[in-house]
Image 1: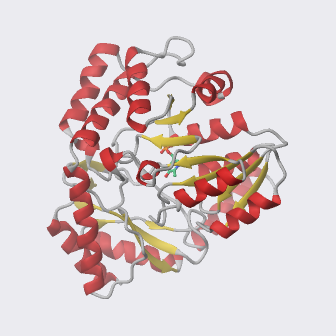
Image 2: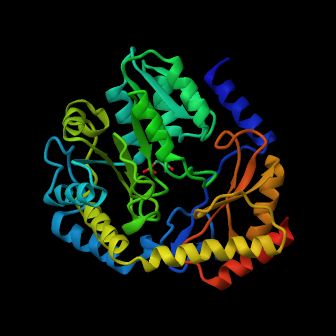
Amino acid sequence: MSWQQRIEQVLHQRQQQGLLRRRSAVTLSPQARLTHGDQLFTHFSSNDYLGLSQHPAVIEAWCSGARKWGTGAGASGHVTGYSPSHEQLEQTLAQWLDFPRALLFSSGFAANQALVFALAESSDTLIADKLMHASLQEAAALSPARYRRFPHNSLTGLVRQLAATESENRLVITEGVFSMDGDQAPLAAISEHCRAHQAWLMVDDAHGIGVIGEEGRGSCAQQQVKPDILVVTFGKALGVSGAAVLCSAEVAEYLEQQARHLIYSTALPAAQADAVLASIAIVRQQPEYRQRLSGNITLFRQQCLHHGIALTDSQTAIQPVIIGDNHQALAVADKLKSAGHWIQAIRPPTVPPGSARLRITLSAAHSERQIAELVEALRHAL
Ligand SMILES: *Cc1c(COP(=O)(O)O)cnc(C)c1O
């Protein structure tokens, strides 16, 4: 089949199965508002859990950073793209999260891929939770290492895989908070099993950093776990973009030699590093953002319970409403949109087949009234 035919066939199939993905150009604004065309919505689809992408101090840090450093870093950090702001951000992250070193990457996707490709050789084994993020699934599948998966959050499944592999080097990979389900990994138990089997543990805490635990240090700190490698991203609760790998001094130095996404890619702008620093300062010093978010989660769950709307056990900002069928999930999302609520229907392959869902995300920026209106609209739409 020619490329042209294959492309047309894929698009046609996607369309028929209700799986065609399309982007909409939207304008985000404070108080969890969004405009599309000339219509105003409240949005419940963002990972900006604390509303920091709209925070005046974060915006000002980025603007004044751009005036100081210019807009782009101009080169990889290995050439001239590494500034005192990058250095300060790495030191702040290492101190905040209590690791010897932090290394910046331009995205979480790049950080995950770089780590797997830099570490894994053919004699090694990667063991990951089945619901691990696409960036890791893909890197693990492409890497020369053996790749094994265990059922989501299953300790027995993990132990079975650990016992079944003889590689000297085994890397167990999981997330702090799972992006589509909002549930948390049993990190303390996972960490113990890793230690017992002399495997390394890598935790991707993209959805935990900033929102969970004291000073927003994330899932690992909350469960008093120190993984060998921690990945945090800046595009979610921190409201900016970019990512960091937290690790030992030796691993950091090894990555500086081997991580291709670091060496052959333009560093994130210094002004962006300034914005992330401003955001981290707010996260650490102002627990009221986390308190407001946690109040909103409780309120949403109480009101859904009251109206008989079925939720999962998730206690985090990610509150999925499982619909099942793809077309039905789209129809419910459309109804909510007509009522002024912007919510994404998430369909396979992002989630397992038959589990299409509304991925509702709550933020500290939502008011009680916005949440009450959402629950009312949900009740009607369902
Ligand atoms: C969003 C996400 C990433 C990717 O991070 P970006 O900085 O957006 O590229 C990686 N892992 C998980 C679990 C995520 O949710």
